Length: 162
Image (cartoon, rainbow, N blue to C red; front, side, top):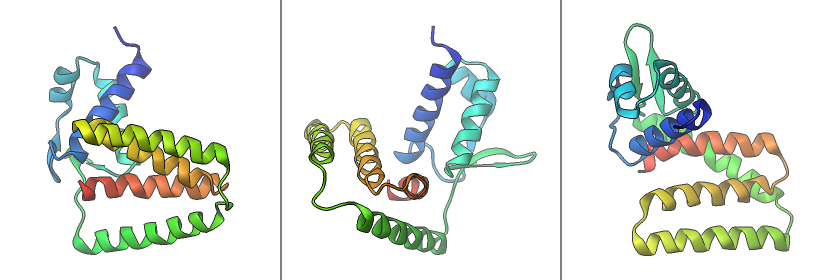
């Protein structure tokens, strides 16, 4: 049996993947009772997971209406990508060149795992390794606040991209 933290992490990751891969669609309701049954966890785990998904911007919770998968208008998509372009360009400009050998090695390892996942069609690993690659890359800018902001906007964009 999984502990509370492990259960919470599993629920968050599975719902995130369901949203990103289109198994849960924009505006689709996320019913707590159904999620409790699906994951076999207590209601407080589901509520915490929905709060975290709301925090990262892929679920909206409306008072009296429950939680729904986030939907973006075309204008919001343009605005989101404009912010990402600014943040990512600035972070890239801060990465010391030539890049540290340890950074290059780490990125190469992640890239190989990503390529292997592409070869076998492992969508979950493709998705997770892509996120990991970019987190490592932008962390190299040396500004943890900038890196955190990039990760936040990237997560929101994942819902749109996929």
